[in-house]
Every structure is written in structure tokens, then in C-alpha cells.
Image (cartoon, rainbow, N blue to C red; front, side, top):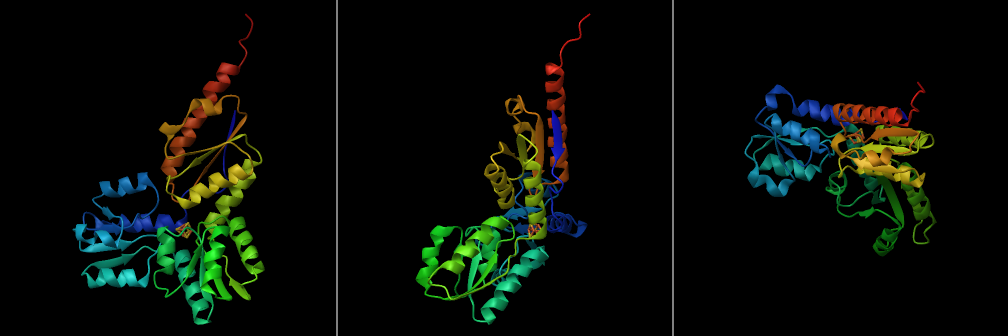
Amino acid sequence: MKVSLASALGTCFGVKDAINMALEPQFKDDLTIVGQLVHNRQVNEALKKNGISLVKGTDQLDEVKTKKVMITAHGAAEKMKSQLTEAGFVVFDASCPLVMRVHSQIKSMVEKDYFPVVIGQEDHVEVKGIVGDLQEYIVVGDEQDFEKLRATGKRKLGIVSQTTQQVEKVENLVKKIRELDCVDEVAFVNTVCQPTRDRQVAVRELADQVDLMIVIGGYNSSNTKKLVAVCEEKHVEAHHIEESSQLDRQWFSGKQHVGITAGTSTPEWVINEVHTAILKIAQEMDSMERPVAAS
Ligand code: SF4
């Protein structure tokens, strides 16, 4: 059984920088991260071990016991940052620059009189940050949301996307929005970030070669789920796991080539652990299938 890693996988620079910032000695035992720094359980557990506290959002500020708070790599609205400062916290910002690019793109579209539309997942922390300072907006997750768009009566739209969306899905939705009879003009900037694109291209290429794909990442990680979706589109059996203990030997039975990929919030050590476990399974399966030499 052959085992291959996708040519681009795992933690992106935005997540690495945010984790490194949170682990700086100045924050030990004196930092609360507002929202999950990354959508990865193992990373969040490692941060907690370093004395760093986590709260889900600004609605839990009464639980914060530290002076320093950190905005996550997913970014936040200016309104939320002011709320934290006004509450007396010292705010550190680990927002990824590529998320901040989405904030500035939508802001500049609104200034040019375009009605803001975000393609993404409405309840995702990144999307909440993107729309948090806007007076009015629409989040489009799929074609069913076109009715919401129609109901606004706005004919001049400025569209951006959540950074971790699937590129083809975003482009397809924008194409369909352009075709709507209720829309006159569309300005579109595809803000799916480069590390997300690289991982989607790499999983697509690898999916053409394998008969099983193991996708590693948090169950709540948007971009990890998109990697699974790419495999499903290609009709390749894919299993989404968070750690090596979830590997099921039965998945590997009869397989010739296994691929491994991981979302942008999956740390290298988790990927290495899963890779090693799969190599072990492959070795055991190969030795079981090898014919016994005649004596
Ligand atoms: S997935 Fe993209 S936008 Fe999000 S932290 Fe990583 S590089 Fe930044």
C-alpha cells in the first residue's frame, strides 16, 4: 500500500503566527483568547497547558480573569475590539492579514456604494468579524439565500468570500448572482486565501491518484470540511479525523494508495502522528498480503 502526503497541507502562516504570538512568554498565565484561536482542539489544549484561557466570545467577558485578551486569527469587527478596550482589557490582535484584507475590500466596496454580500457561513467567527461593522449586508451560503438577496431590493452588489470557502463554489455562486434578474451590477473580489487554495488544489491532484483519503483537522474547521467535500466531489472515499486514534483499520483493507491531507489549522505534529500510524498500518497489511515463500 502506497501512502502519499498532499503537496500542500496543514497549518498556514496565519495560524502559525497566531499560535506563536499566544505562546510568547509575556502571555504565560496572563492571556484570554476571545473565540477559538484556531479551529483545532489539540492546539487549544496546548494553549491551555501554557496557562492561556479561552472564552467563546464577548458574551462571556464576565468570565475573563486576565488583563490581556487576544483577538483570534479569524479577525474581529472594530466594534468588538472597542468593546474589549472599553471594558478595560489590553487587546492583542492575532488577526490574519488575509482576513483583514477581506475587511478592507468590503469596506472599500461599501464606500463605492455597493451593497455588501459575503459568501460564506453566517455563524462562522470570521464572517461575524467581516460583517460586524456593516450597517446592512447579506451572507450567502448557497443558492437558497438568493431570496434574501432579492428581498433587499439592492441591484448593485459588492461580493467577497470567507477566506476558507471552496474556490469553485464561490465562483459558481457569483456567476449565478450575476445572472439574477434583480441584479444590475456586481463587483467581486475572490478573497479565498492562497493557503486555502493551495490545499484545495493539492487535495484535488492527490484525489486523482488514491483510492482512500484521510483528512486531518478539527471537526469545526471550515477549510478541513472543504477538503473532504473536494474528495466527495471526486468520488474518493474520505475520512475526516482529528487524531490518529480515530483511524479504523477496516478503511485500509484492499486499498492500493492512501492520501493524507490536513486543514490550515492542523499542526504538523498531529499530521506526523497520523502519517506514522498509517505507514504502520500499511506495513502490517502489506506483510499480511505477501505470499509465504515455499520452503
Ligand atoms: S486560512 Fe488563510 S485567512 Fe485563515 S489564517 Fe490561514 S492564511 Fe489566514
